[in-house]
Length: 184
Image 1 (cartoon, rainbow, N blue to C red):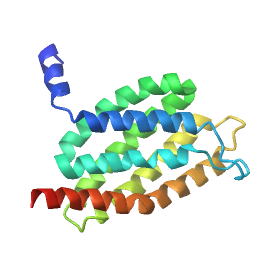
Image 2 (tube, helix red, strand yellow; image 1 turned 90 degrees about the vertical axis):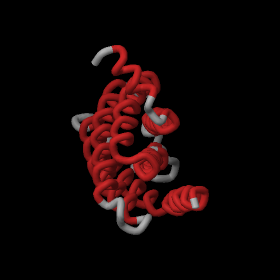
Image 3 (spheres, rainbow, N blue to C red; image 1 turned 180 degrees about the vertical axis):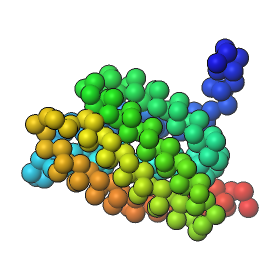
Image 4 (cartoon, rainbow, N blue to C red; image 1 turned 60 degrees about the horizontal axis):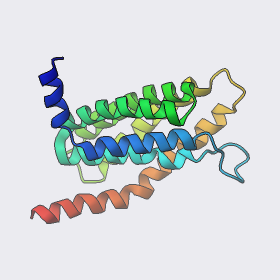
């Protein structure tokens, strides 16, 4: 890619989404290292942080389309991996990067496929499918072969991600309808 093409690519990005992804991923990678007290070592704080990345992707997709969303996800991936190497163990950072890019691209594609349905369908379906991809890749790559009880942690993490889809949905709905009211 030439310098002009790279400059054009970067200047056209929706940077607030890129930065939101980077902050969420770094925070989740740091938080996944800490177990929620009282959960018998089967739930980490990262489970409550990362699902917001899918809603950032969905808002970008709703407002700016799937092509811009893919560009944002790719830029976010680069930044998030770099930040993750500072905030987390290298194995966690690598697993997170692979899971992030895979899950977010699934989210963008599935959301776009269901874009014309009622407002809550695209983020619901895309987040559930993307969470499945993300959780499976992350927990297997980050912890398989270690003494970390990663299967129970991964299942609890996945359950929280699915619950967060529905807990955060009213905020997503508010933002979508606020946008519609502003343009009406």
